[in-house]
Length: 581
Image (cartoon, rainbow, N blue to C red):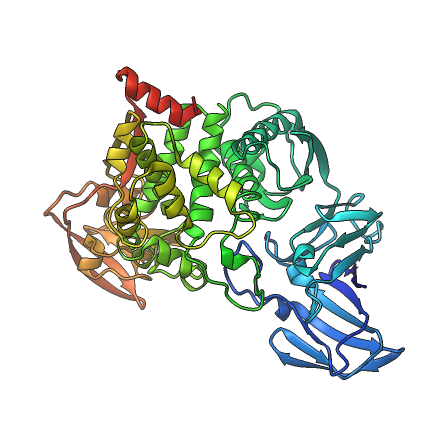
């Protein structure tokens, strides 16, 4: 017995999919159906059921009453015969998380379109995709998905959670393939682009080979698919079992004229690296609590610092280790990560464990006070990974590293997942050292990470200097709206906050000069400690003059550089970190 789904792009211009669900042997007391409220990998309740436009149930050729129980649950009247649900889903979310339908493309995640009959979670699922009429589409559409194909546009999955872990793209896309460790890989690129396919293919193959080798040449999939949407502006990625959904800006793909790797192309390769790494590190090795996900509510864990933070550490480091980046290019990227963390006052308020646990309500629902209240488990998690890596290397005389921690987890915890203290236990085992104080200070506490000492170990100079291109050291983030620059964030314990500048204020003048954008930033940043400047603002359309005392600034803009002359031991330590030599 299988749950049978059929999805049809019904009205491309109205952005409506039609879905049919056929269920045999429903609950005779009334069958309950539900739609997920969130999608794994993006920890926010998104209430996908709000996009269901209409729903009907049939049995034995007749309509069956169906009643809504709450925001994402429906129940049919008692029926012992086969039930067929027919419903329409509005799909116009241009992201990697939901569903989208126009005459350019059709895209969906199962969490947005496939209702689950409760009690049938473990049943096999069959999917039939009805193609859109070619007369209505731009170009000749093809279909790309990681689902197991049984016939043309017919697929199957062993259970519901597997079904919804495979996004589907239908469009006139560019498709290319390559082999890694004998496993078929593909990328489908949707949208207008002028990509050097040969170069992209080779660089992707290099990255994928590195990650497969990292996990001892063990792949958790039989094939892999990169789904890539190209826009003028856009960025994002979401991991799946044997695929990933990506959005990138057109300028981030390599063109035939691109000679040396630039920052834009690096950003795209790092995104591919990040999401591909997740196939091992969160889709296979995962928190123990993630083995049975409840997609109707929040599923809490303290471990996102492990799965997103460690992945964020390795996504760019792998580009260095494969020599796609030079050490200078890599250190520039890493310095940007450090700067983002150091600019955030929230690093002194929220621990990484708390950041992981509160992702649902804080990280994914940030307001203007977020820089003062939270820290990112992505960026600070990556810094903790680096510091932990250096500590392990020092404690073991450079014979072990964080690489060994991840491989140990891969070899021993696939079946059961990680508990909150599993990584700590592995670190203690491979180093024969008690790291409890380390984790108490830097994971559960908010003590500043020992970045300087960690970089010293591998011969990297770490400096912090004043920001010149923004007002973060002064305590503001601004955005120009019309005639004036408006304050959108005020940082805690800064000159701006102490003076009483507020989010929403429009800066009219600095020392009676009407300034905005770069001129405004330059004027404020040239002021020195102890000076008082007068800032004119509009608040509720009333003009106020606010004196601001320039306080002491702790620079947060990070610069990393290799040191030219190192002794042989530090040089070797650096090369082992850079290139695993």
